[in-house]
Image (spheres, rainbow, N blue to C red):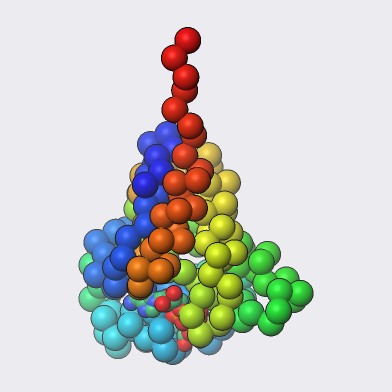
Amino acid sequence: MLTIDRCTLEARVADITTLDVDAIVNAANTSLLGGGGVDGAIHRAAGRELLHECETLGGCATGDAKLTRGHRLPARYVIHAVGPVWRGGTHGEPDLLASCYQRSLEVAREVNCASIAFPAISCGIYRFPADEAVRIAIDTVLENLPRMPQLQSVIFACFDHAMFERYHTELRGRQAPPSKPI
Ligand code: AR6
């Protein structure tokens, strides 16, 4: 866990659909009409009403994010972010992934979220290398914190222990060393 001012960043092994936070982020595709992975799990848990709301949004560009309500989820909102498909890293994938986190945080700020949970966007079906994705996720959240005074909790929800270890190690590496006694 890393605490910066009033905000904690933590990794958790968790099914993101169970988290009682203001917003969970979905790793969606450009249609916003559901799919496999975490997207499928979120749509199953939220119910048909989520699909109906998504149908009104007209899709979403890669690197962007759009808001819906959480419907039957414990979370108040779902922020649907569209990550890049990994195509070797020379097609702007890192910038597009950073943009997903950036846009998700901007959307969360618009509805005044104090707590948000992210999955490892693009790290499943879209095959983005996990170590680099984790660094991008944490960097982008940290860069945005000064603009988000309402934010108190950021959870990186990991589906397996290997992903948890990546976030945990990276977060520990960002911890300021204890100040030396004078
Ligand atoms: N809670 C938390 N993390 C999860 C969960 C869950 N319930 N389920 C899977 N993960 P992926 P992508 C992890 O494939 O790579 C869909 O079809 C998973 O282990 O869900 O961005 C969409 O419609 C991995 O670490 O998303 C798109 O077409 C991470 O979530 C496409 O997949 C992301 O894996 C998006 O692919």
